Every structure is written in structure tokens, then in C-alpha cells.
Length: 245
Length: 245
Image 1: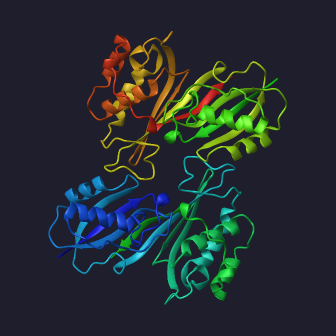
Image 2: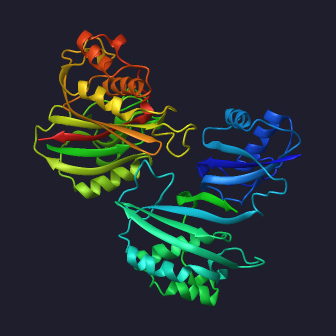
């Protein structure tokens, strides 16, 4: 048995998210597993680094797969891509040590969230940016982001109530603006269910003056979801990179 | 009667181009005219600065329209957008002098063409960039572009055989590369049928070493379409701006 690491990019617009669900063919995992079956004759599980929600995109999602025999990595990559729809691409296949697991071996993740602040939505980025037509105070957002980085209990920043542990570390939240477009980048050990989107909603409420920067800390302290901001839509969110040691 | 100038942006991916064709509802002009009818009760012709081909995009297409009465420009813009699909946006409506005509009054146009040179197509730009997986020699392309700028007979760079005049002036062709993405910008008085796409195909053949820079001049001299390069696909082309005095 050999273990391979896959790096995958997808436009999540028309999918029900990463995770295979029964017979639906509208999930990234389901489509990848079908392609692997067709190419290798083997029904292998494609284990992602994590589930992305419906509509969320990935530039560098990772997955691990265990196959019974040796494959030519580049040849396998090309053959899988021939079977995939154009909005899902396998970027790389690498032989890794047995025991590698895309989720369990991961030590960090980087997400980015794109906001279109123009008065009217840009027709070219509408699938990949959330249209939020407000003048954003980036300095206020950066101040709020300062409270949100570090090691904290993020129970107020998730929509899942029964997480075993809500402690995570965010190394950095970088906010950059270029013209009408604002991008927020999150670099951390890992993120809870909906966490990046709630962080983004909170920062957008701060940026548009609906909330003070200090309130971002308040939602951390009280662990109360109602103290945090709205759930920013899936379309602006990208899983950019999964880090391993 | 009052004349208005409209500025329009569209993702051309799913349309049969600008020009209304009988009953089809798959043209930008047809959809705009229907929206104007619904909003004003008046069936007015929306005269574009030029036809864009099927699949070509626009950041700033312009059109003129003559309406019997006065309208509130911002209100009209908002109401039209309510009637338009999300891949077509009316950016601006301006009252202009009677006699203004989007095509006849235009003095220049700027187009841009986007090329994705990555090994595998980027899933996020695939609708707006042509995937041409070659290492491009930008200096050779700039040399070829030098021959193509100026005032010339561009009969070798069009697919329409019966143009009244094939003389045009290209002020500038700018080629810029950032990572895997190469953008070619064309600034000129106007462009013949397929001209920007044939210029692009020619420059890509130069950039990928299939053709010498000097051959770009040869196709100008001989006026022979067969001496010019391939027709680059519509998906990478954007009408960026139409200039008026």
C-alpha cells in the first residue's frame, strides 16, 4: 500500500461542498473518488484536510489517498484531470510516507476572503467575492483583528455547539485593500465550523461602523455567538493552503 | 427626445455576443432593450459602440439610447439593473448632447486580452483567460508589438474580407506579465472584425517561439491573413474602455 498526497483547486460555486453525501455527485470528494475509481479501478477514499462548505472555493485543498500499487504521479494527475469537470483541478500528486493523513498531519491552514466593496457588483468577480457595498475602515478592522489573533477559545465564533475543543491559534489576520477589493487572509492552526466566515462578518461590521473594534474581543470573552458578527457568505471564501511539517 | 450614454459591463461567457439577432434572448443588446422596454414602456434601440463577438467580455462597453422623455439617471440605472441578469450590469447612465452616437462619436477603444500560461488551467480565471501553457518570451512579443503599432492597413489581421477601409491606428500594445498571467492591452482608434484576437494569436506564436517577431510585420505588408497568427479564443478578450472627445 502506498500513500499519496493530492493538492486540489476548485471553484466551489456549483457544489454542495467537499464531503461526499450518499449518492450525490455534487461534492468535490465524491467526484474525485469517482475519477480515482475510473483511472485505477480501485475505490479508494479521498480524505480531505477538512470539509469545505457548499460554495466555498479552494486554491490548495489537500487530501490523502491510499492505493494498493505504485502509480506514476504525473501520469495519474493528468488522467484524473481528464475525468474531472473544468472547475476542479488536481494540481499535484506526491508519494508520501505511509501514515500521512491530510487532516491529522496538518499543522496549519491559510484561508482568504474576498470582498467587493464597489457600489455595483463586479460581474467578473461575483462568483468569488462577496459584494458588500460599504466604505470600509481598514484601520478599525486591523484593530479588531489584533484582538482576534493569538491563542483563544473561539466558541463565540462557530455555529457548531458541540465542538470537543474550541481552542485555536490564529497567527495572523492580514487585511489588504486594492481599489474596490478588500482581501482578508487568515493564518492559523485550524478553524472551527463557520469560524472564518463569522470572523469575516464581524470584521465587516467593524469596518462599516456597525460595531466597535473592542466588541470582537467581547465575543471571545463571553463565548456568545450572538456577540459576534454575521456569517459572511461562502462565495468569498478560499482555502488557500494547508501546512504540514 | 433626449439622448443618453450608457456604460455597461458584462461577462460574455453565456451570450451570443452584443448584437440582437431576431428573437434570441442570448444577446446583450436584446436583453438591454427588453429591460428598457419594461422600465420605460418604450421600445428604444440600444446602439452599442460596436459589436462584441460571442463569449467576449466588457468592462466598459458604451451604448447610446434616445428616449422620448426625461429620466432620473441614477434611478433609471438602478431599475434597469433590477431587470438584468447578474452577469450584465449597467454601470452608468449619462444625459448627453443630442446627436451623440456611441459608435459614430467614438474616437478610440481599449481592449485587453488575458492569458493563463500555467501548466494547468486556473479554475478561477478559466472563464476570463485563455489557457496557453507555454513559457512566453515577453521581449520577443514586445518586439513584434512594435511592428504592429502605428497607422497601417490591417487587412491581414481581420477575418472579414469586404471591409471598406482596413486602415487603423494602434497607439500602443502593452504586454505585462505577473506570475502565470500575461495581459496584452491594445489602445487604438478602432479595430476590425477579429483583429484583436488575431493580433493576440500572432503575438502568442511569437512568444512561444513558433514565429519570429519580424513576421508580424510581414502579415501587415502582404495583407495576407494566412501570414498572421491563429484566432485567439473569445474568452480572454475584454472591451475595457471606449473613448470620446
